[in-house]
Image 1 (tube, one colour):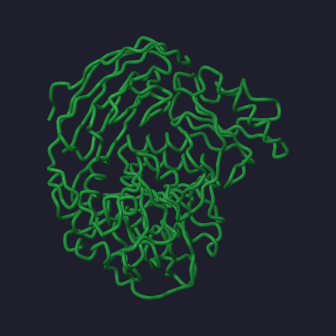
Image 2 (cartoon, helix red, strand yellow):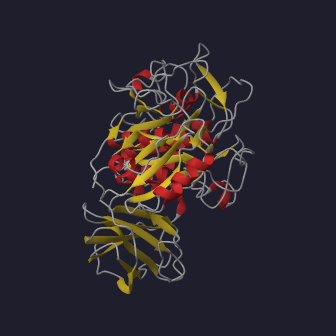
Image 3 (tube, one colour):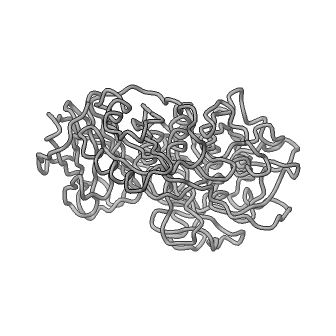
Length: 520
């Protein structure tokens, strides 16, 4: 329900920020000769959308031995390639120099991400993952729907596999590694990861063939990892943007590594705002911190369980974990004559969650935030710590039979309240800080949306539990894309103090609306 705004202007800050110049949408393909896979010689430069174009804003600052080789206008970044013989110091100097320019929001290395799986000896046997998450019970309600699309951003998918062909339409996907329209694996013996992931999420069920996937959702393949199992930030970010633009309801990221990057953060933010739930693997280091991109607040971070529902020894864990799912010795589709094989990893746990999300959307029409809540509220506590299992082990039967908002296994009464505030910023010298008073004692989730002018670049910052206004340099959460459409989702927020929200103009001015949706 819409309510009287619970906002108070705490302070009106005058912050010096950089001015910029505007951009159009679209991905420009790589120039000829740009190598597939990892791109260690490249620097990604993010540009405010108030610039004429990312390429124009950056090209004039590129040294003579480097060149702009790629542009993504939707995410507003370019890739600048240096000669392979160039010293790291030259790239670092460029990062230092270009980030001083008014229209540039960031510059970072085009780091490499890896498929997150752990191979073991072949173990051919019965599936256990669908049964462990009660998919077989959920199938009494729905097998899934072709109207729901799961995009697999990964290696290419063998879309003519007998257990996958029915899940692909005429548009099989896109290849961002080789820059063409066919995401089929280049080398079948080496490039099996994407096919295995796709089979877990949506291998055709009840077709008298091989394995049963979690859902009969439609599949799209965004090939962003090469046959070596690695791929660049730019290829993956472009694939995420593309999947969102294709209307993917769920985007599966069984990959990680490379640490925090603004380019990837902006990609998952964009996908979420376009209506896609992004589900990502926690990582296979066995460490107490979740890998990126799973650690971004927009992503549903998934840890891996052994068949006995203990945490897999390889699985990362930590405060960013949202859900757990079976990931060890999971049987799924393969690319060679073997056709089916068991492998392990958080890569395998992630499409289990994506498949359950697909089943849920076949029954309920939910936003990404509400779908995330539904999966968490209906998860099952398997006796692990919250850092290991998050809200619990995902449960398909609960997810499809529990009315959204009714609480399920994770609590929450389903009520929500929405408050809005309208104001304006005049220029990059302006920021507004607002205090939001909580309606509920223990809300399950709060969503903060900022909608600002298309001719400006506004950013959103939030602090919880402290009652202090965030700044552009000190904050609990930040949404910092290159336009003025921002969103921050916080599960189980700290209500010990009012929520503090900062709206900052990076460039330009105009009217904006902040909407806070609090869910009980």
